[in-house]
Image (tube, rainbow, N blue to C red; front, side, top):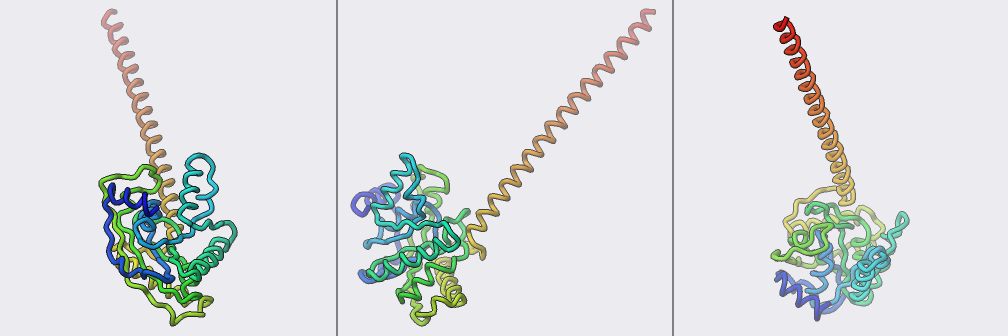
Length: 270
């Protein structure tokens, strides 16, 4: 990843980075980043000097087919941790255990507080769970990170990246939440910590903040799209029916005119 992928990314995309000195040369820290694109999982780990361990949904490791095997090989190769998201609290508890283990080894633990990629480039409400609970359980500093323009490099659903886009990474100053250590079961404290981190990410990224979860926004966007598609289809159907009715009316009018013309001709002949 560091020796092959990073040089290629620098050659083809010329990514820029600000605030790299805010990441310690050694010792544990939590990297909390916005999530705009699948390519975030390439740019951030490849360009940082130290290894970053992110958790990744188990589907990345179990998808069949050639693409699935390549994806699994990539995530395993860079040391990412699969998390089974089945069950009401399966993903959260697994993420917390994984994160604490990474921090206790003195490494960097990466997390996307939004829980999923932004559907439209906006910054969404951070989920209370992995980020705050790992920070309060371990006392590790939280370093906010803003990915810039990666959604333009690889929009959601697009496999081949767009060249000619220069993405960036902006790294903020570490946030110290040691004053809350041991209070990881207080939901109000967890929300306060999460919101403070999200505010710093918003400030670094310049994104518009939306105070709902990205998963809810995705559902709303999907529903709006379905509604718009249904309305479009209904409009197209109504237009076709109107065109058909107009055509039939024209034919009827033409037939009537022809009939009247024929009758007039017969009278003249008489």
